[in-house]
Amino acid sequence: MNIWILGAGAMGSLFGGLLAESGQKVTLVDVDDLHLEAIRRQGLRLETDAGDRRITGMKTCRPEQASGHADVLLVFTKTLHTDQALRSIGFHLASHTMVLSLQNGLGNAETLCRHLAPEQVMIGMTTWPADRVGPAHVRSHGRGLVRMLTLDSVDRPAAAEVAAVLDGVGLDCAMDRDVWQSIWEKVAFNAAMNGLCAVTGCTVGQLDAVPEGALLAREIVQEVIAVARASGVEADARRCLASVADAMAQHRTHKPSMLQDLLAGRPTEIESINGEVIARARRVGVPVPRTETLYALVRLVEARVLSGELPV
Image (cartoon, rainbow, N blue to C red; front, top):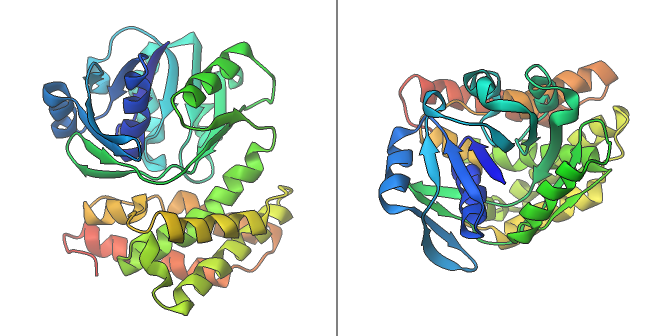
């Protein structure tokens, strides 16, 4: 397959590196010139439970430098950049191109359908952790999985092939007709873990340094799951809470993407995660006071960071 990764941050680089290591033809498309040039010069340094190695052979380019057409496009851009990113490579998306969003938050499918036919769109979620240590250097330790489905729920050989390729490189990927449950459960996980780490500066494992930290994470998860169920999605609170506990135990040094964004002086995805939950909660009449408070706190820290000051 000719696989393009749109958004070569920590997650995009992890997936791209594993795919290239298995022999797939991979192109990383991003606007971070320093990261792309480092990969071109020295390969991608990838640290996982399987070892510390350098992966070479990937093509890297900015959107305006891209050529040809992708068979598969994996979208890892921040949700606030998705629309512009897809416009920048629209010419390279053929009628046969299958596009899979493994992005955080809600609303990604609607954005993709502004640029593609619905039958080309696949939605999904991943629980793999990834940290970008520096240019051309990504670290991922612990377990994870990928769950995905065509947007219209139609079984297509091309979609099954994408899932098989991802599973074949050790990403534990499967087609899942209950993917919207998984997506909402990840939104609940991120609303708690990303937001709390963003405002406290804690790694995932540090959130349980005091009982109140872990308790607050659980309470936010419960609020988001209540919104999902009121919206017609049978998300499982127990399963999500187990994921929170597992992350605190297994991914202790991981800095979630929202914290990584603030440390790098970038805007966060708070609107597509906590913000979307709050908007949908109001539509279905579910109170989410802790989620609202955390949303306001992240926005305050983000405003401080974007004004040129460091986070607390």
